[in-house]
Length: 164
Image (cartoon, rainbow, N blue to C red):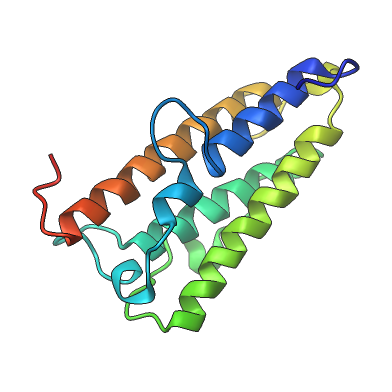
């Protein structure tokens, strides 16, 4: 339910929650797509040249955290190792648990930051592919949906499906 004082930011926070945890109409959210994935599956690419599920989750966590960093006006950061796609294959269960907890923590921090935003800030300029905070957050919703679909497809391929 949107906050009476800041209905737009409350609505965006709700949509972010749905894109991460579930309840979106498009299909599984990020956390739902990752549910039941073990380290062996997470570290295996869906095919030649494809990213592994762990790499996709790490990439998603990076952009969720980077979006949170930009809310107060911080300039874009430099991805770890110079790339927002970090190699994550042949994982241990504890390493995979770390990837999952990092993604969860990034989402929680962003969700709290969006809930704390005043609606009047949504049209503030932000560095990145979209010139406003609103555009950045809507773009992140799209990013989450895209990668949730990518993870779902990778799971299907790993289970022996064609991916179609």
